[in-house]
Image 1 (cartoon, rainbow, N blue to C red):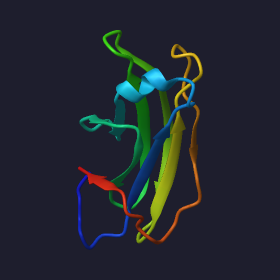
Image 2: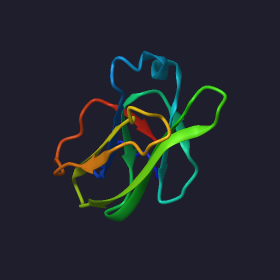
Image 3: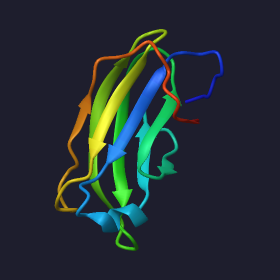
Amino acid sequence: MTVSAEGNTGIRVTTKFFPLAFLLFFCKTIVTIDGAAASVLPWGSHLFTVPPGTHEVAVSFRYFFFGTYGENRITAEVHAGQVTPVRYRAPLVVFMRGPMAVDPPSSDLPSTTSHN
């Protein structure tokens, strides 16, 4: 995964949690694309610049000092010049998998944080 100022190709991963699970606000998400080094990030929307093709996206979160929970994986197809949105929501029970979905790609890059 690389960050490119001129590239318009990537995966935008948006992570959310149910508002009553407010303790998750103090936890970080873990995003891995194609098994590369995991990025530990706050909840929200993050852009990963990747080459066109099929990529596996894995998301989980650290639940305080108890380890990682809610892990799920999904395959996303990225086309040249497009950003493929991937949504992840923390499960209501931390021991379950968090639901994930791939939305239709967009050709514009939203103002989000870019990561390697």
